[in-house]
Length: 120
Image (cartoon, rainbow, N blue to C red; front, side, top):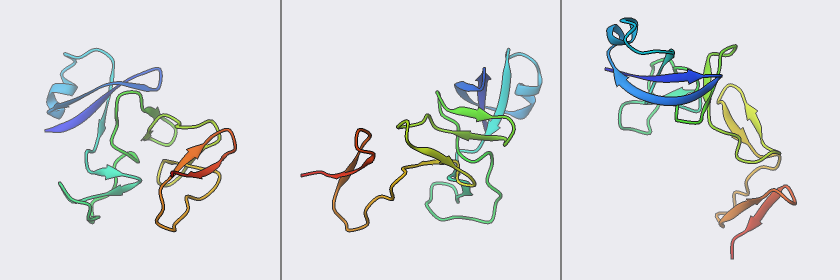
């Protein structure tokens, strides 16, 4: 069994588990694109693991409802979290214009100042 995303106007509206033969049968209306539950950030991971494996990544990220399907690049990516963030290939993850601090403290993004704010 595989995961398939229904695409409407470039947006994922449904994700199902099905056999490829069922998708090919024409029973379902619309456009269905296979997605991999084990692909995140342009990397394929071993099943139920955070360990990358040798399998090729499939379409950037696992598709979720509301994700965009970029037909030109054949990838899925999540909705943009903030207007100032940009999508980054080859991970197809959103990146803030300022790197997240690495000092171990907790921060949250403040779009008004376009920077990370320390959570007290």
